[in-house]
Amino acid sequence: MALVGVTADAHTAVIIARIHEMNGMRDELKKFKDCIYMVPNTLIHHYQQFYDCLLSLHFKFNDIDGASALLLDLCKYSESNIFVRCQREQEKSCTVSIGSGNIKMGLRLQFLPQQLKDFFYKVNGKQELVSYKNGKLVLSNKGLAKLIIGYKRSGRISELSKLLICIRNMLSSCSDVVDACIYLGWLETAHDIIEDLESEKYCVGEGSYLSLLTAYYDNNMLREADGLVRQIKRAGYAVNFSKAQDKGTLGLEVRSPCKADLANSIIQNTKEDGEEASFLVHEYNSSIYFFTKAKMMEDAIQTYRKMQKMKIYPNVSTFFHLISGYCSLGMYREITILWGDIKRSMGNRNTVYNRDLYELLLLNFLRGGYFERVMEVIGFMMENGMFLDKWSYKNEFLKFHRDLYRSLTACDAKDEAQSKRIEHVRAFRKLHDQSPITWLQSQLNKLTVKRIKKRQTASTFNALPRAHGLCTFNVSKAQTINSRH
Image (tube, rainbow, N blue to C red; front, top):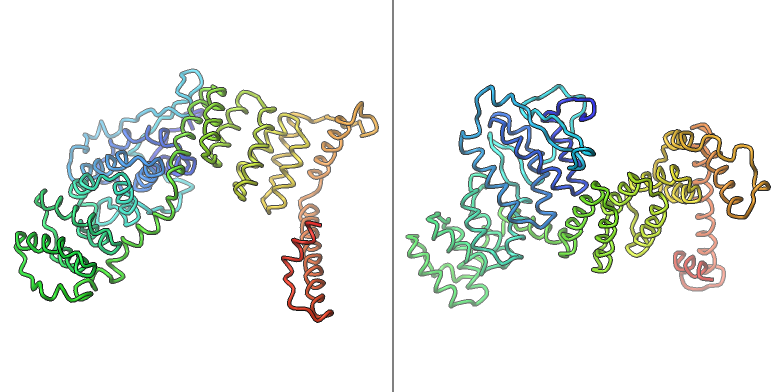
């Protein structure tokens, strides 16, 4: 779009936001933020997914301050008319830099945030953290849970309480946070939030006081219960405190499914967040991306090696940025070295990365003429059931190596290395000269043969115990023992 001069609109911004979120590129997405503030309130619902993605990236980077600032901006946006511009100013477009910030290497995208074209492709709705209800943007339970986890992890409960008051229009009720903390057994945190809300003149619900008081009695925390009783009296609530001492009587309300939604979301997100190292991956990836787009590969590799020393496991984005950086400089040999790191990473973590990474490797190996690596990646993709875009690979091959070894055979090779290379080139040609139907049929035949062999092996091992009167024999263990020998 930047090359042909097409102006971006709201749909473009949402698609770009989804892509940047998947790749962890927060700085790139933040470039659109100031432009979107030019949009009037009547159009803000078109950017709900944009803000959802940006908030998600703040949490991925463990940037609680950034997430809080974004929520405060959204609150101010919906509560005031400051952002409603005159018609002439609303129709102004802004320029967003794409890729490298260097004037010679980077691109400039014209962005008209108020424009809504009839787009041929629209992304599916995404409302994980921020949703649009009753004419305003609201924070979901998952978004609020991530916010609570972040503040509690850093011990900043008083700041959380102040933020809850400021963004109360984006929440159903601040008391839900107190109830969730009580449900999780965070009684001290719940009490601190109640005191903070009271100091800010916010009216805390009677049910939150009673739930906390019951929890104190249930846990024999009598000293804390006496202090809360005095606090309830100061708040002006008329409560029969003798009933609160009956365990479980007043705490049933908070244990209901509706009240427990936020608490369950906190538990789920705590499991998903994992260790702090996961946040550092995104920080390092951001640095690697900055260096690669500026063609500073030495600095990018130093950052990558630093990750390894700190035992921070790289992810798909890490390798993707490095491969793209090497590709932009035509350094295909270095990509073969990086392929070794990727294989070790897969072995250590017992994982398989997504198809896009392997296809990027495959295309670069084709350009560099590393056909042994090409066939290795193709074999790996076939083993894991990944789609092979044969015609794209064939076009790339014809573009760079159309007549390579066309008239030579392995017997004509000068040495063993060239002989192997000729064989790999011929294997690649043979694979891609097949028609789609023939190739698909060969793949189905291979799968059928594998399944038949697997069934025969299983039936053979299952027959052994019955023949000799032994106990039941585990086929998977037998196969493991067989492979060792």
